[in-house]
Image (cartoon, rainbow, N blue to C red; front, side, top):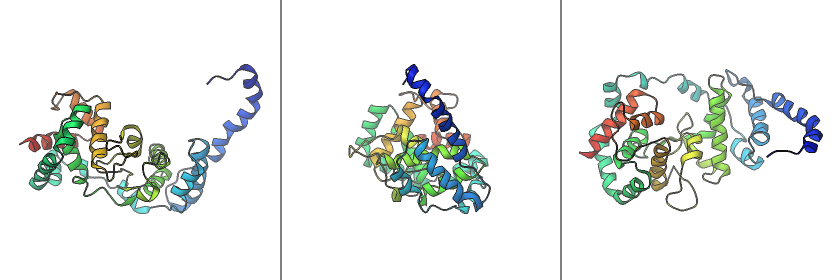
Length: 274
């Protein structure tokens, strides 16, 4: 919103003070636990002054949060995506996973049909993602997402990226979609049965069961429709395949950049049809 000239002139000296505040309050990253408490205090101030979050949300979510050394260890030890496709597929997919997916397809047939009508994404693609990410919801993660993201935000390796995700996680709480104590997921902050990063949760989650909340942890309709909405918004082309070089394969790369993962989604989706 533009200010008129009088307001602008009157606010020049005040603006100079405000613009200097972030530098004074800026949360500084670190490489061990020693500076985490100071970082957290500075981030709390930024969360309200810079990101517009309420002090109630910030206090409810961040009071008492501590540094998690295990999260840093896990961040430094990601090896599965360095496997060959055959190794990765064998490790992640088996006949039981395929059969379970086919059973769920039959169980939620009507839901999948509505989702394909509304978003254009076929059931087998959603099922493949659902199965690969959490075994159809059986392994969504039990780690405290806010604590994990606070630790990764403080850590200097990818501080900017994870700070954005931490802010998004707080917005999920502020929006009333999830309570702080329900924010449990994977070590890197992914939430729900198809493992949405908080920023994706904020931007793409939908309330498909109509209960007034976007619940990607417990609501199967919300989980499946939100996954389809993500793919649709990234450019999924209804009625087209997802083979190598296709537009839909490129969309799957938006879901996960690892080539072995994208190929596994495609192959698993084909097996689910049989």
